[in-house]
Length: 124
Image (cartoon, helix red, strand yellow):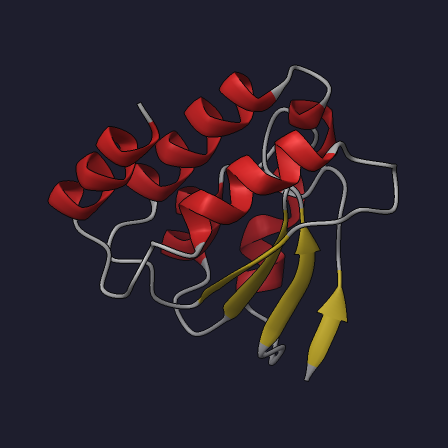
């Protein structure tokens, strides 16, 4: 079973862990939500997280998208149980979408620090 949950989930995280939900969809990490994805993954050990990429990061430009995305990948090593969704509904610029795409298309499972460093080097 998949359930749409976005917004401020930190106060609910332990209750969500007790449910029979299989997939928690639309989780937005900071700076939009208040629950870091690595925290959600460690709390919800038997759930898949379908994460919404935080749209507010796009407003800061491609460099911020790059830095935020690489830090996100570092925080979720090895990357199990996570799907990252990027939205274009808020008219996200092509530059931002291309930056995020160039990172995520090279993020193969299992994620490693070495692999993330190689992605960063390719984008330098």
